[in-house]
Length: 347
Image: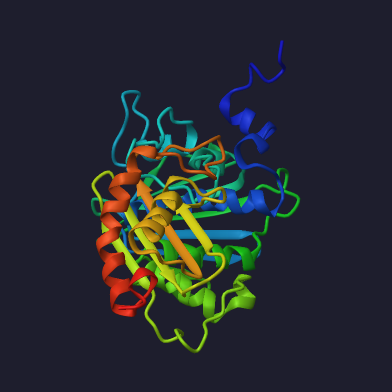
């Protein structure tokens, strides 16, 4: 019999963390930290939060969002607080409360229980209905029941944790990588206020700002795109549109490039193998306007994304392609006509 078959969920996560976070290196640390960051961004997508704050000091990590707070004031059929339940059980649905859309900024999504299980200590503080609830855990086990420690008009949730040195050889996140990824979140989710250490990132034009930043800092972002004098002052094509079952954010820049550099994202994660969203945007560029930009980026947020394989690196939703092309084409045609690009270049 498999020795692991009889382990409970907590013991299994601690015995085989690679199954949940990929590895125990700095990459695994980053993936684990992003579990609570992903949940904060979900609150932003639900129009319930406006900002995300991340502070790191040595191996102590603090993540705050100004959303409605974890539901410690509500209990399940067994009398367990829902706030506690989120941190101590593996949920059977995509999310603990089955909300949608739900994003994963990386290919893996291990859940808050996994973060808690792999933390030497974790303290969560959450405002609900005029009360500040707090609960402490050690390696996934509650040290006491959740309790009200303050009353007032506060808002939001703070997760304060130290990852377990028994699991990770180095419990400190890569500060450079963490900063880059948090800045990327600000690009992907326009209007989200992201604070990391003493810096703040907020971009109202999302992927258009990402492209401009990539052009302005090619060495930092490893981009080969440089703006020529002929079109460096031209605005970036940008569209951010709700299309019912999914939301499109798309941007493009440059002209007559032998090869387009693509940056594709689906529900917060980088689509390294591209997929339907790139195919649809490329179809609109080639067939509708005949434009070959130097760089193009597309991000979609979907309630029910479908991926090829477990790593979420390729989006496969063929039924969205027609709606995508139809939604983006009018804006593309207008932009190309105004700036004389593609088949409009001779007009």
